[in-house]
Image (cartoon, rainbow, N blue to C red; front, side):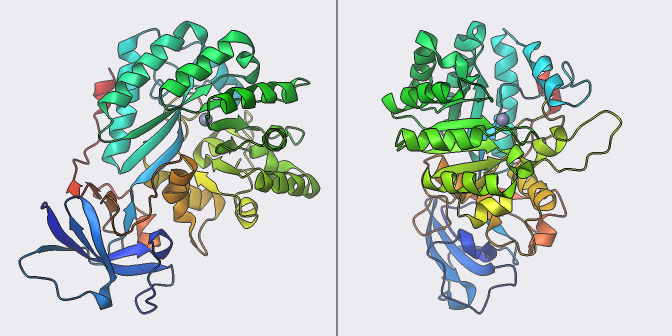
Length: 428
Ligand SMILES: [Zn+2]
């Protein structure tokens, strides 16, 4: 491994869709769209990119690291997590694996301990960082009694990790709770942390009114929106559609993402098409959480699940609606597993949603698309970009997605970081 301020990465397999500009070479592109490239790194930045056959002779005095066609990706962007709930499984499991039980279990696990919350949230940050994630958006439950504590822990971690991870908070409450003064306090406090207004809309006679209130709070503060919509299998659940209608009604200019959107997959084609049109008109992005959906949806005692739980990922993409994938919950009642690993999220998504044959540009869903939806700097591999890269020994997608790739290297600003995961005993 090279640790130097000036070096080359040679023979890197990079998905063409992650390179900007897209190289003109047609010679060294695999069937899966992987381009064999050489990258020059200096002072933490990528200063040159060449398709390997076009690389000029490299000065002998400059180190080079031959990746032997190992895949290189930009660092992951995990845009939907719940770090505050993470790693409570042992003390608060989900007794039957259902969504309803998860809600009840989490409500009974409100910790009023700064140290407990800090320790579990930081465990998530350490795990994410070590495996190659550079930015995380986390929803934060905002029960009024623990609101100050939760935001204090988040703020302290955001400051401590600011040189390694971009952290964006999202307020997570039911929309009715934004009524009155409390809604303004929550929006103001989230704004102070560079955050996003969020929540869970439910089918409700007051839904339109609740969405109007939410959009007004966000507009008044120039905040983006991030909503958990339709995380269920009820075709009459159409809060995604209602959110798009509200965005158009308010001529909302900020970024909006809607998460889960599971019920879209069980609606009639006519209804789906109307919602897709509205989403496109309102410029709403979708975040799919395939692992959590697989776990919670279609779960009934003593019955075999027949639905994978995910939204219409392919149809959304064909309608040119931006789509990201993310990890969601980790080892809590909403998902009993998980490891804060962007590669695992992509790997599982490929298998759950058939994102192979072809792989196309689906890898953007865990790298460049979420970066754009979060309003971050471009996350493409390009000249001038920070050398924040994940380097694998796997040379092709099948190799990449068949092993956990625990021996990956992660570069941040061109320097290889420690990729050891935190010890579970640190949670005690
Ligand atoms: Zn969520």
